[in-house]
Image (tube, rainbow, N blue to C red; front, top):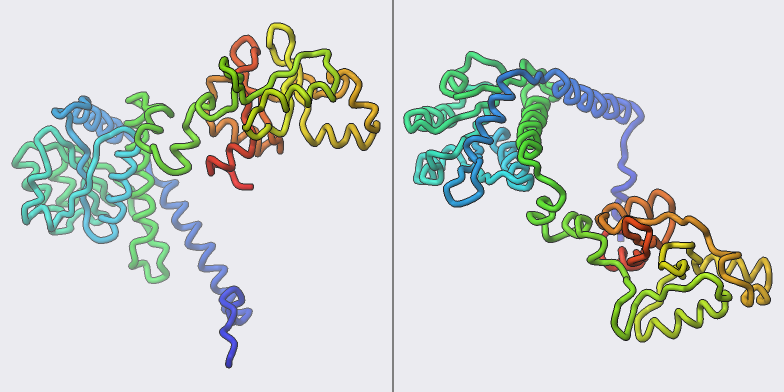
Length: 354
């Protein structure tokens, strides 16, 4: 039986590889340059105001950003509609052909419609713009340059300028759609910023997946010193021996899995230090088992990295990745220990990989 070729090692000559490398790099340069040439002027700021005024209310009377385009511009439009919706602005996509066959009923007078067409003369999009103008629905157009039919019909027109496509034939929409996408993202995010859309708002519209979980308050997922009979975070007082500290931890954990570190606190429960399981192994290896009878503060890490109780899960993930640590004490504004984030808990939450 003939062995199938390994897809990871394609047969390509040195000249083909060099040509392919050059084209790939040229595509990236061309698309990057197309974005860099897009200007932000007064028309952009008026477009932001138009969207804010049309979608100011979050109740049933508030308008939406309806996005439409045909072909590749339509695909960009679908992504932009998703960006608006996920950053606090009601939005949906409307296919310009379907609009002529009943879907025009999706547009209300208090909506604002974002129409995309690089040339600005796409028949189906121009027809839609004409009807919207007759119905006094505000239209924002994103086109290549002013002077097109769509520009004439639009309330506000944003331009990306003359664009050389990354396609070697200068035919396939590539750099133009990239620039259109970037300008639309800028529009959506400026609207979102003006609305004071924050991380908590973002979490509400992204309740599932890793994004939503990373925006959970850290106090919702941490281990904490419960007031009841079964605390899941033993706190070790300063002054006890290392051996006694682990006895306390075992006595208090109940049926719960012990964290990979001991949190040591002062009499007022402020954070004094931390002793990880790794620290314990090094302690025994270096000083022998006699060290277990010594006071724990002689071996703990004083002033360890900690997380504020107002932080989000993503903040814990960032600290753990950046400093390569496995446990983070959580403290309030007075440095009183209120909990602990263990890397194993973040792995179980699927916001960090093992």
